[in-house]
Image 1 (cartoon, rainbow, N blue to C red):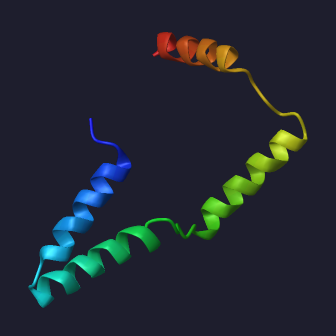
Image 2: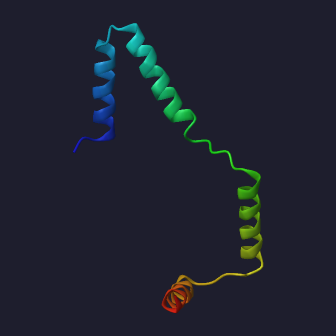
Image 3: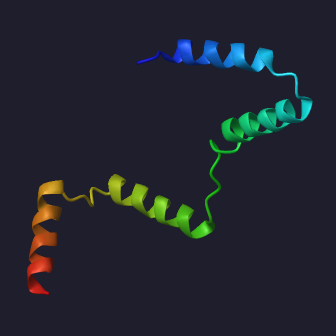
Length: 80
């Protein structure tokens, strides 16, 4: 399996051989958009509120173990 460095170097070699300006511009847009825009996620107000509520639950010790949650879910499913 190729390492990240090998893949990157192979791509660089291929890019250096491209003479088509339009293709290079399109490739540049693709790379730029995939690295900068995909890392930023804008949350809506309702999502921010839910996260704040979760933080408060954690601070107040309102937690349940995964095992207890699994048991609760099984009981709920069996009641259907």
